[in-house]
Image (cartoon, rainbow, N blue to C red; front, side):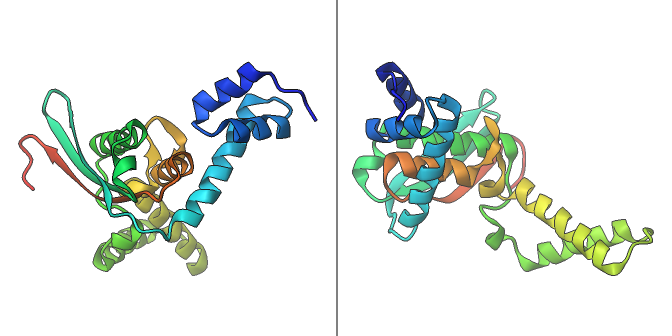
Length: 200
């Protein structure tokens, strides 16, 4: 087994927020490679987050974020399981990240299941019209339409949007990583975005 320097373990703990034992195991597993160890911890965090998904989250915060000198404002409700976690810096930081995402990327929906059926139908209709003059088989056109619809979800649903600080992951992954670190189920419940001078 690879001998791991204590400073390396400490460094990984600070970066990941994971426990010392988990950090040591991840570094041993990856031969002391910090980047790969982070990946191992992220995967474990997400795996444990999925297990916690069934637990009830009724505590949390309504977090407000103001951007651009008062031109854009967002409010998000993020739930967790206990009042203790709701008061931690890590949880508040997650709420801030989600609120900043809403300010920057203006999602229309929280998740794809909330997109009204008529909106999906209208999008498909538009894509079909765009493909009308293309001489492609119907099944190929159908696949292209499905691909465009997937992009629509990624652009418009908060949990599927690429994270503004790291586009290698989406907001759902950011939340699951926080669940892995904090150890409680966390749910982004709802959000609102206000732009000065825009009607609701």
